[in-house]
Every structure is written in C-alpha cells, then in structure tokens.
Amino acid sequence: MGFSNRGLRGSTFEEMINFTNERYRNESLAIMQKVPTPITPVEINKESRTITLAYFEKKSTVDYIGLVQGIAICFDAKETRQKNFPISNIHRHQIDFMGEFVKQGGIAFMLVNFVLYDQYFFLPFEKLKSFWDMAQGGARKSIPYESFDKRLLVEYRGGYLRYLDAINVYLEIG
Image (cartoon, rainbow, N blue to C red; front, top):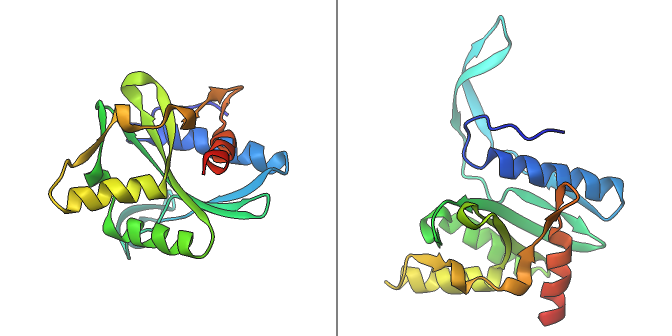
C-alpha cells in the first residue's frame, strides 16, 4: 500500500495508521476499526455513483476504536505543522467521550504527528485532559512539543507506526 498525498490534511498520517491497524490485525495483535463520520448525502452524481454534496449528521467521537489483547482502546489522530499542538484541534465531545471510555476501564489517547520533527507521540488521555482543563481556565491554548513524554514516542519502522509499543510503555510507567 503506497501513501499518497491527496491534498487532505492528515490523510497520509491516517493511511499510515490504517496500514498499521491492518498489519496488527493480520498478526492477531489487535482489532481496530476506523470510526466513520456519519454524513447525509444531499447530491449524488448518478453516472459516477459518488456523493458530490453532503452534510455531517452529528459530531464524530474518535477516529479509531478496538481491542488490543483484551484491552479496549480508542484514539484520535491529529497532526500539527507547528512547534506545539493546538488545543483547538480537540473538541469537547471528544474529551467527553474519551473520559467516559476511560471510566469504563479502557485506554484513550491521541496519536500526535509533529510534522516539523517527523515524530509521532502517544498522548494519554489523562495528560490531554490536564492541558484541556488548563486551556479552558484561560491558560496556554496549546501543548508545547517539549511537554510530550519522549518515552511515549511512537516509532515508525518497518512500514508501520508501532503504537502498541507505546501503549506497553504507558502501562509500565502508569
């Protein structure tokens, strides 16, 4: 599977994650599903059978949800071309969903791609929520690159993002 730049922000990153999830499934390590964003078609091109105009029915929760060796996980994938990760990239309904997911015993996180550094990070929900709460209270509206835990750096090797390794590190450091 090649990675093409279709002009969509984050599409290459998403393709990398989809490829990784397919590999994890083939290796019986995890079953992850991309959560579709519900849309209602308004116009359809009957010749090509493609949707030409649609609107979002409701807000989506996270990008991916599934199981890793019996542990429920959900995550959203975001990328930034800045030296920080803007809190505005995250929406209240996502924070609420991830919080509920964690309360039920699951692991929720963000995979954050820092394009400038060509690095990917596992950002645990607890740390994300802490920055979110501070931003809502008037503090900094972004998470500086330096605030990301280097132990939770997600390696891109062998053609896929090794985020399961980051989950293991996260579980070890608690």
